[in-house]
Length: 198
Image (cartoon, rainbow, N blue to C red):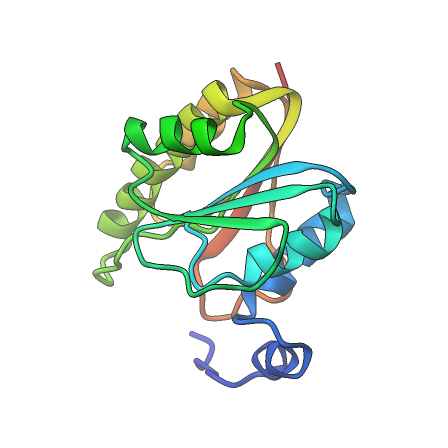
């Protein structure tokens, strides 16, 4: 098993460039490959703390875009004009009603998710917990993502990801699996990229 390196080049690069976490470079790699983010977009980021996805999204969508971040933990203020954050549970329907009411729109152009369960170290258990989170992310996308929109979600290996990919394929024209370089070598993470919501 590859050695865990807490302070590798992506950790250092995040510090140098002012990102709160290395995960910004995971999203950057996905964005560069699939060209997801454009100026003026409305983006929902689930599992947003500490906020590095939101930092990257903010740069790409510009002044005319809006990024909404949601996490169970409080997200410390990013001091970005085009970012709004909410503390809440992705399974709570009242949360989405509040977001829609406060922001004045009910559909997003892109949904990103870096959600991960609290891990136990047992791959099957962690994988199933990850699957359940992501099935909810697909449901949120089904309801709040515009036709033609995109979805990015993190998965952990150790479960039948075919269930998730099968569900995604019912809602999107293209479903791809991608592992950015910024994922630690010791990690079981990959990302599912869904394009062209039907």
